[in-house]
Length: 283
Length: 331
Image 1 (cartoon, one colour):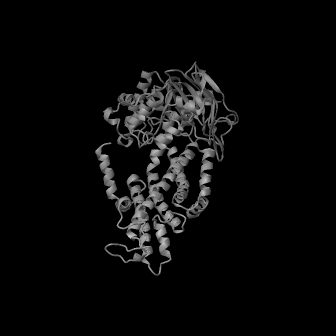
Image 2: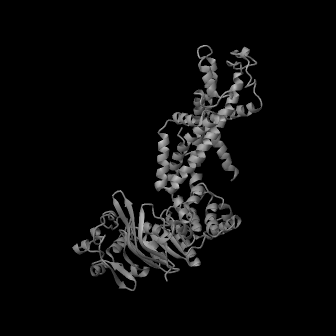
Image 3: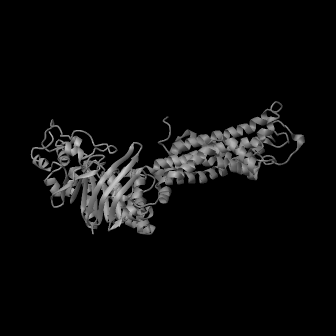
């Protein structure tokens, strides 16, 4: 591809304000996660009770929690956790859900009915409820909560894939492809998937934000990440009992979750503007 | 043995209101190198016939009869076997060049695909062949155009690309379904001439589907005139155009604008609309619109009557129709 089209892609990226803001926030969170792998301002796993509830200072920017750990360090390390959950859970949803959706759309008939009714069935349970159910079966823990959120993502992607793919199957270029002797698998990979990719990418960023929220909720309920691993949801849980004594303890992780979800949703919006100009709202 | 022999082909589409009989009792004989035109107004079953030949009917479609290609019945073949025939021995050009190419792939890649699929060419050979094909179909500067995306080409050029794709594996039969309808009049002639030349060079057989009598007259050896899903008149092109017989064929002709008719002259029309394919009238399907219709037409289906060699007309009132040729049936 020539340089002109990559330039216009870049230009479209910078022109979309949501993309720039959302992208910056997401990049910032990624940076925090990467930096926390090698360095945090304080120790994440060291408990020192005599330093509990310190007020913000040069040494502890956001103060310390009830075990005397540096809150900024905990937040940074919590980013890792949230991003891991998001990436893995969305990947599970993408691979299984998109696969199922494409099969449903290519095979039609009873295969489609089976897949779609099954995803309707799993939709009948609210996300958190089904996640609680799955962690109740598999036992609480970081990995199990990721699996639970991932499984919840499968029907979401299956539905959106099947719906958009069905629209592509009726296009004339698919008919032309069939007329040139291509089988359903080739048409799916060469014609259907590339044409629905932009919608899937946008949906993936939104599901990413939902996954972070769901993980925080599960950890808050004590079903997700287990101590001593840092997690925003668990920080909220620990702060809850101290709401009236140390209100700021709850504000920091809450703000972090809000920022991440806000950033990812904006990024999803921006990506939609950039990838599929036809879908973007008129400004 | 004819290259393509269609015997008593019936196509029906199941709908919520009952089966729609899109094609009834259709016979085609096409020899190698022959060009066959199928003409008729919208909804007469032209496109359904083409799709049935390719085995690409919508999922609610069912067929009966026989489609013999070199003696092999295509209707009993599996989807896998049909995939080897489509694009390879039988190819199709569609009406809408604007939407018949995938917007996310370069045109070169789309021409290369059937070459690699059916002829097993390597990527490099397929690329060279794609450039050659683009040159053959008259796209200027093919070695650069091959990297273009469909939106960077004009409508005429896209149709040329579609022709290149259809030609890529030198099929025995090329089906062109209204190949020029979506194009400018100035481009139409060029595209038809291109198809004609390529068909002659390759010794292919062509099935040209059109509602345009001029296009059919200039480009075909044989013609089927279809109405309401069935053939009302068939024969050699010069026989039919020299001796318009069936009242419907006469009506189609009368409805064409003529040179020198003046700016206030009104076009002749055939009164009424095409029959409802779900509730087809008994007897002759053209009865409701035919100026010669009698109760006989309403009750019994006319059989094909041979006027002269291979010129067949399905009408109960042949003599009256022939008499009316001079002054015209439609006023």
